[in-house]
Image 1 (cartoon, rainbow, N blue to C red):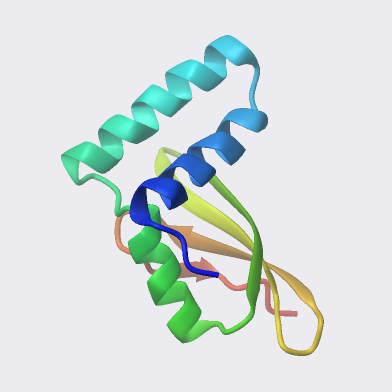
Image 2 (tube, rainbow, N blue to C red):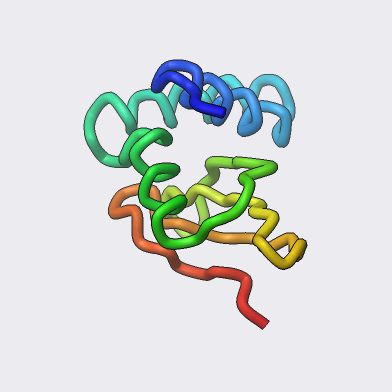
Amino acid sequence: MSRSPPALLALCLLLFAAAAPADESRRDQDEAQAAVKSGAIRPLEDIVAGLRLRMPGEIVKIKLEREHGLWVYEFRVLDSRGRLREVTVDAATGAIMDAGDD
């Protein structure tokens, strides 16, 4: 299924919002949107395109959060062998930081 860039950003921000209390969530959403607009982090659609090339499978969950001062996208990917893997991607560069390898 293909999603438009605004739809992917909206999905990411929605998932991001679901993980935090309301006031904190709104502030985090605003901060995430500003980071994308300023170019500090790459848009979700760019990250997803790169991830699909390097790690085939179905993306079943996406979350954007800050870890140790860095923005990261966290994905849950169902791979071709049916394993659910948590993949962490640097939001600024698109580099896979952790592929959930055993």
